[in-house]
Length: 120
Image (cartoon, rainbow, N blue to C red; front, top):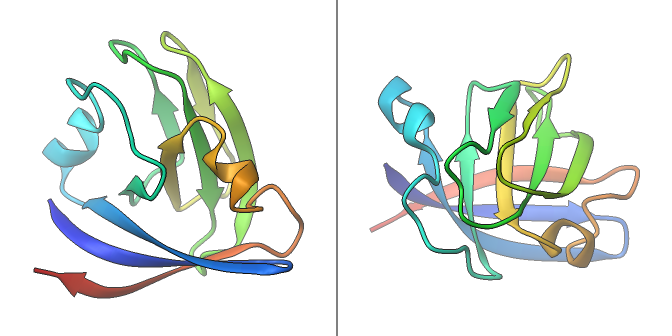
């Protein structure tokens, strides 16, 4: 998986996150399994993707579903292990530490995500 910058544009705020990009089937399948936790400024960007499961996870996460243009379609906050979530029309999902979506204001109308340069 490659590491990228993700620009978070929400009403009243802008922030940058480092994200692992899961674009290959094996990376999307593995996701965050085996990890102990996510830090506040780190996430997993999965695309294409419109459904996520948390079976085998060790910690709750926030899910941010986006369309092909990065517009936020919805947020499932604090999703605990052992659950499945699906969002019709989603093209990608950002997995964040529980509570991060609200802190970044991604739960507000008009929020958008923009991938920028690859980090080396």
